[in-house]
Image (cartoon, rainbow, N blue to C red):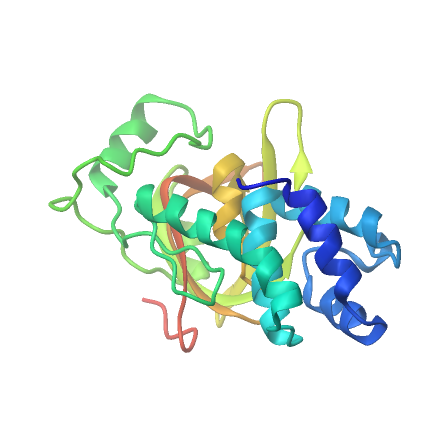
Length: 245
């Protein structure tokens, strides 16, 4: 990244009026109200801890357009980081629409490969990505209702559509980082866990958004059914939640 992102973020926050700063806090929905502060230096650190560096760049860029602060005093500070992040994501095979912060990868999922992996290995979340793998001929996973997902077998790879009901803070576990969010459709609600690099896919996703979450793996624990991100998980916004099959 060009320069120091934390210092640049602090300088951006210091450019905001009190009303603009409060509006920014309101739009940073992943950060609990109890962790929001008027100390702009401390808040910059909390933003980076919650969103991770790439996610923070994307989210702050989005929020500055909402406030709006599109003037050079703010945008000139953000532009080098936003441009660098955009180029980085293009090189890694992700698509990013200018002016938004939602990461959307190509909508494919090698369901056959996932089934083979599920049969031969535990349901540990996958964190390594290989955007150069040729997967064009692989089948896609069907979109299922949440009620059907909860009746499906453990380790099955599925896709779903619904409304984001809650986004929880990032948790740093012993080995891996995880961020959970809840999605609801007409048939029920399910928790989805994003692991490590997959957490960046939540950048720009807000409570109330209609999304399609593709290629997530069912994980049963006792009587609870949840979903884990995989190497091929994508999150894309949709106009409406749509009907699940």
